[in-house]
Length: 201
Image (tube, rainbow, N blue to C red; front, side):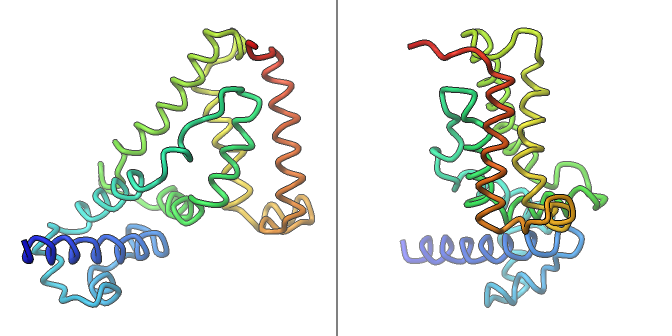
């Protein structure tokens, strides 16, 4: 049992170090040597547990997604509240991961090296949730649930990632409480205009 526990602890150290490395430097900037140094382990030991960067990034993203509390992924029943909810979750729990997605957008990555299946599962669950709300009469019938989900993703991620653009447009810093309050009010205004129907009592 001791060997199993030691192996689990070592694997955990590697995944924690890998997450920091990838989220700070992106896939192309990450180095196995740096991961080993962060974990306080020998580089060869990492190769004992993982084949290389491709497996490390997939395992790291899958591990990260599974570690997010389910309450952060369960959307509110009223679609009017979804944008504010997702913005708060992104700001408070997912900001480092979102920085990795910004790296990902400009890097030329090998296929299937970014935990795509784990992430797709979460995002598709948002689309399915929007479809079910549409069937309940809470979402306009003439709007595509996938495009609504994409729009909400953009509105709740962009200001957090592109702080310079946020400041140049609004005059406020993206980490300023005043900006957060005003942006959440704006998200609610937009949501109320899109989702006009009242939820069932």
